[in-house]
Amino acid sequence: MDISIQLIFISGIIIVAYLIDVWARRVKVPSVLLLMILGILIRVASDRYGIVTFDFQEIIPALGTFGLILIVFEGALDLDYQKQKNKTIRNAFIASLVILLATATGIAFLFKELMAVSFHRGLINAIPLSIISSAIAIPSVVSLSKKTREFITYESTFSDILGIILFNYALIYTVINGELFLRLGLEIVLVTAMSLIACLILLFLLKSINHPVKFILIITVMVFLFALGKYFHLSSLILVLVFGLFLKNLHIFRWPVFRKYFYYDQYEKDFQLLHQITAEGVFLIKTFFFVIFGFIIDFHKLADINTILIGFMVLAIVYLIRAPFIRIINKRFLPETFISPRGLITILLFLSIPESERIPTIHSGVIFLIVLLTSFMILLGRKDNPDEMETGTREPTGGIHPVQPPSDDNHQT
Image 1 (tube, rainbow, N blue to C red):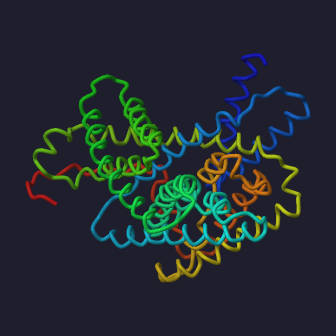
Image 2: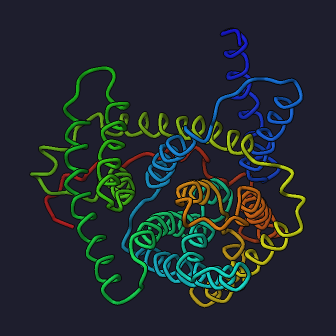
C-alpha cells in the first residue's frame, strides 16, 4: 500500500475517533463501543476489497498494556487525597476485592458445569471477565457527582491491579490456600514500598532535568520500571497508581528536607503539562487498541446461540453478585451497581491465557459481547440518575486541576 494512503488511513482513524469521543460525551455513550464498531467496519471493508493486513494479534498485547499504564496513571493524577476520603478508599478496596473474588468464583463454577472443565481452568478463563475496566469506567463517570467519581476511579483501579495479581497467581498455583493469600499480601506490601522509592527517583528526575524534553523520559522510565516488575511477576501496576497519587498530592508533604530535594517552583506548571501529555497519549493508544480489537473479532461468532447464552449468563452473575454488595457498602444502589464495564484489561488477560488453559467456547466473540453488554449497562445505571451533575456546575473533564504547593509551615502531616 502506498505510504500516502497509509498516512491518510491512520490520520483518518484518529480524526474519526476524536469526533466519536466528542459525540459520545454528549450522548453519554462509552466511546470504546463505537471504536470497536469502527474496527469491525474496517474489517468488513478490508475483507470485501482484499486489502492486505498484518497480524494485529502480535501488537495488541503491548499496545494494550501501554494504554493500561497511561489510563491508571491519568486516573491517579485526578485523585486528591484527604483524610475524610479514607472511608471511600477503604470501601473501594473492599468492594473491588470481594466482588472480584466472588464474581470469578461464580463464573468459574458456571464454566465448570457448562464446559466440563476443571475449576482451576474455569477460574483462569473467568478472572478476565471479573475485572472492571478502568479504561471505560473512569471516563464514564466524569459527569457524575464527585463522590461517585472517586469511588469508581479507586474501585476500577484496584480491580485492575488485584485482577492482574489474581490472574498471575492462578496461572502459577493450582491450589488456593492460606499460603497463597499470605504470599499475595506480602507481595503487595513489598511492591508498595518499592513503588515509594521509585516515586522519589522519578520526582527527583522531574525536578533535575533541564532539557526541554523531559516528560516523555519520565513516562518512559515509569513504563520501564513497570515492565521490569512485570518481568519478575510483581504487581507493578501499583507503582503507576502510587506515582500518580504522589504527584497529585505533593502538597501534603511539608517536611523541609523533602521540599529541599523534591519540590520546585515550576512544579504546578510541569504537573499540568504532564497531565495533558498523558491524557492525549491515553486517547491515542485507546483509539488504536479498541479499533484493532474490533478488527480482529470474528463478527459471525456473535450470531452463535451459545455465544449469546454464555454472554448473558456471565452478565447475570456479574450483576447478581455486585448489586447486593454495593447496596451494603455504599448504602445505595444507583449508579455504582451498573458501572462495572469490562474492557481493555479483560481483553489483555484473555489474550494472555495459554492455549493449554483456554476454553474453546470462550472466544473473542464472547469477550466482545460481554464488553458490549456491560458498557450498555452503564447507560441503564445513569438513566434519570440524581447524581448527574448540572451542565453549569460540571467540573472540567480534562482532569487537570491546580496543584496546591506545600505550605511554608514546618509541621509534619
